[in-house]
Image 1 (cartoon, one colour):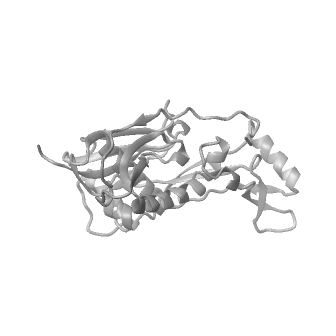
Image 2: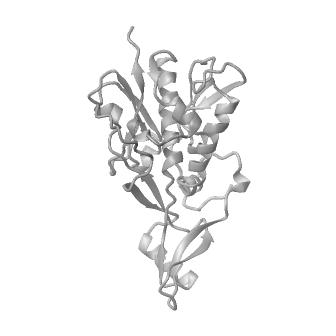
Image 3: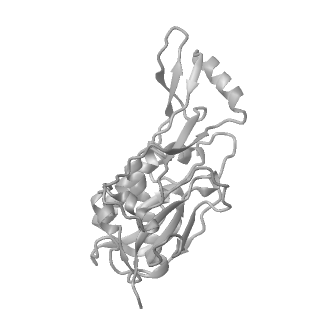
Length: 280
């Protein structure tokens, strides 16, 4: 097992296995059903919803979850040795922007992942329209200009580590960077919220908003349903935090899920309108 030597670790997510659904929660198929990790296995998620995703939909969700795992939280997963089914495929190096004394331009070099500093960036949005009740006619996609940014890496003292890197690499400055991919991230948050609401409430407790977006990857109007993330938040005691909140907004019949992945690292909370409650 390749480690940084700092003994960095995160608390283990508790194991929870829900009652089997018996049909795909995205398309309704009852054939070739597989279990769904509510929070991706790649992020250390251990809440399982059995018989809830057909193979076709599992392939779709697996692709955008994989994009997030490789890009946005990829360096974090290596830093804390979060689960992977392809450990041998993890890169040995990470990109780092550097500036040499003889050049005014920034250049990118590959640095051993055990010493390479990096940034983690997550998109930030206003509260979703379905929660506030102010549903916009204009289409608003997953694109945003606001982000939660944090630095991370294998160091105890950042300034001393940066000095060490400059000397080792023969450069005068370094600039850690982040990969931010809003579309797959929004799809992953939608999938987490949708599957969690069904696990907790049942398949027929609400009329869902999100399956079409998840299946087609059409995020052109995702901010009608997905929003939040105000920036700085205190660290949680748990690795991940999911809760259902029926009264967070002004529209009380909209089922809203609060999603906070890796909350112990002070990440933001997202609010997802997953559907409209069905009256008994």
